[in-house]
Length: 365
Image (cartoon, rainbow, N blue to C red):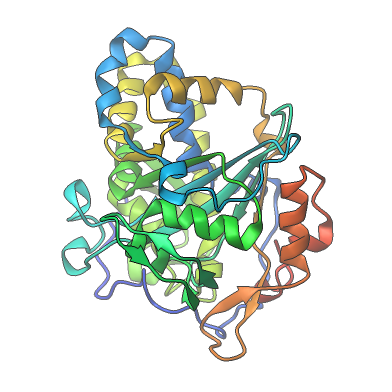
């Protein structure tokens, strides 16, 4: 197994780089279209399997933390259209509390941010799905929010998207996404670092193949077997690979999630109650959902409702963005592409090809 050294500087909060090879061509394969949403969606699928033997997993219910979105946000939300399918906001947080305190330089970093944010849209019929990645460095207008302690956080313009979580929590991220998209979020799911690491370790590691080395992680070109902590560094790295930006990091995350899904399928984890329990225990301890999914049975029901979705039909799209004219290290939503994308999701319509192109990513989705 390859061993990854701890980088001397954390790159999780470094600004995106405008230059440095962002025009580099990347191979586009069908695998990349599955996207980086897979890790967090696995929470639903794992718990769906656990739900078939609920009597073994009843004690896991108490691990799941719930957020009442209606109470936290109030009535200031987009209308839910009758034929708009289901929309799930998936967050990967870099919280440094509890089991996360020693992960990936956690002792040197305080607070928490939404390290990954995906809007997963499941159309009526639930036969396919699309996930929209929101780059963490996107400048947005944050709406007025109620924070975790009940105080009011005023609205603010030109703030980084991933700062919303640290200032006001997941409910405010939901409200922010709803304001920027006009899309009503039906559910929220958040998994922290410990959940990520625990999943990889529970399955015995994940094999990835690199076309070029990642020097900060001491990974040469070739195939490497990564454990949980190494995998965490892998999906979070930006310097020393590609163009060094958050947009470039998405490619690594996509590659890793494909490898993770392949490993799970190869091991037939859902046929192993022992491994399924270990994974479910790790993930539920690191899981926050909306109040509609905050029990094992509700998660299992939701997971089973997605059984008809064929992964080969799933598609990941990055929110179309362009580099900000005032700060080239930040991006803003590109129009009209972003508006077209959100409208298609809002109305459960087919997403036009023009809405999948991101100017800041060389015209790629």
